Amino acid sequence: MQLNPGATKTNVGFQPRSLHKETLGHKIYRCRVLIFMCLPAILFFFLFSYLPMPGTYIAFTKFNYNKGIFASPFVGWKNFAFLFTSGQLALLLRNTVLYNLVFILLGNFLQVTFAILLNEVMSKWFKKTAQSMMFLPFFISEVLVSLLVYNLINYDYGFISSVVRAGGGVMPKYYSMPGAWPYIIVLVTIWKGTGYGTVIYFAAITGIDTSMLEAAKVDGANGFQRIRYIILPCLKPTVVILLLFAMGGIVRGNFGLFYNLVGNNSLLFNTTDIIETYVYRALMNNFNFSQGSAVGLFQSVVGFAIVMVANGIVRHIEPEYSLF
Image (tube, rainbow, N blue to C red; front, side):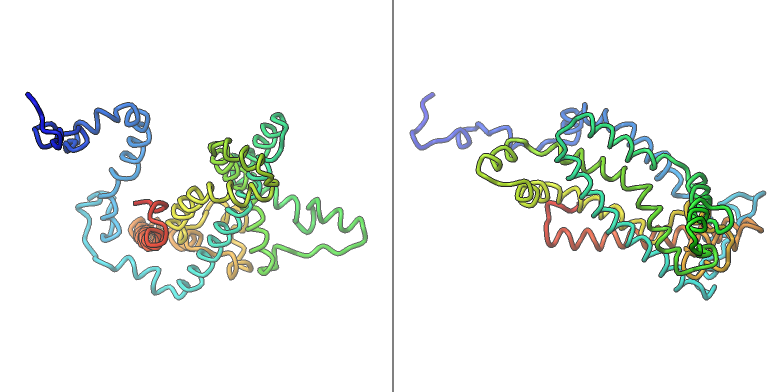
């Protein structure tokens, strides 16, 4: 069969493969290796995040142990009134949100900074040792962290107190000073989590095409210029994604850290009380699962809304950096 000179494969019945609509089954088969690699994570979130979702119904019931969740009396929004009518919601939201904002902004800034500094070190031995040492605090439990802080700043027996008194100074009584604890909590949180984030950003830096850095070096770019014009722009997608993920937990606090550091010291509640610690103290005696679930559902809905809004803003500014 002869074709006209102006004819194409398309107009004589031949179509490129890309024009055929790929079915879902073909996509799954083509990406079967990647799906298999993601299977543990998919199962984890299905079992521990999506499967328990019907249990949120407990937030709208007066839970009865004998009847179970779905047979317990329905009370509507009554359980949510526990937090909204407590008179403490404004204080709790202020503390929770402000602490998380500092953790997110200051934490990410330090993590990116340390990752870049670590990348500039030439010694591989030092890099591996530094990563291990920085990563170690992340695995220390909040109980041990609180014990460490107590033995450092306790007025009577703390190590720092002993050093200050030995030098003729006067040690402040931190456990009766509400204004000092935002700094202590931020310092402890940054110390505990910076190493983990640094390793993540350092891994992102190692994934940057080295040919760009080498070409910039050949063209005369110094270290600061390579960081500013190559490394930081390449880290931008990772920073944005991690910030979006962190925004989902902005109304959730680290109960283990706050409770173990402060405990039931009412003198410090004005600057250290967050939603989780307040709910724990209020419900620990009667084990009211319905009201506790209502608070958790409120936090989840607010966090989801914040992520959606933040993602919409990112998609409007830089569509390729958004989650979806």
